[in-house]
Length: 130
Image: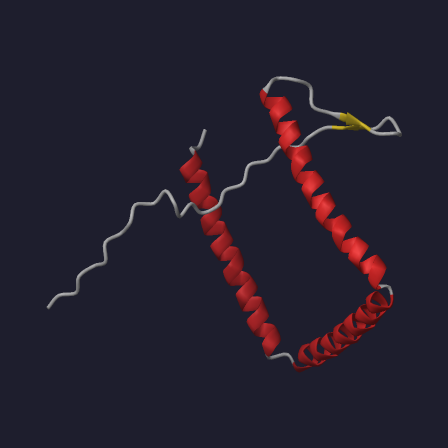
């Protein structure tokens, strides 16, 4: 079985190759006149759509405020649900929710990696030759 570092490095190399292919593809689109024209039209339409949406939200400012509060509450409840589920899982208790339609909801755990800048030793600045 491959070790963690080997798989991580392999994935990193594939991401780099994927990125290079995407960059090449985007570079080829830059020189395509019809694509540039359509892209400009799309941007104008997006801007117009956004303006109409902003006007609609301005007309119903009470709903817009309530919507923002609900979004914050949902985010907070989602975090609390995750914390509670993880605590139950760690204690070895069953972790599930049954809704009003008798549908079972079970947690889906995942692991992701991020850069850890705190754990790295500080590098001393390289002195330049005099």
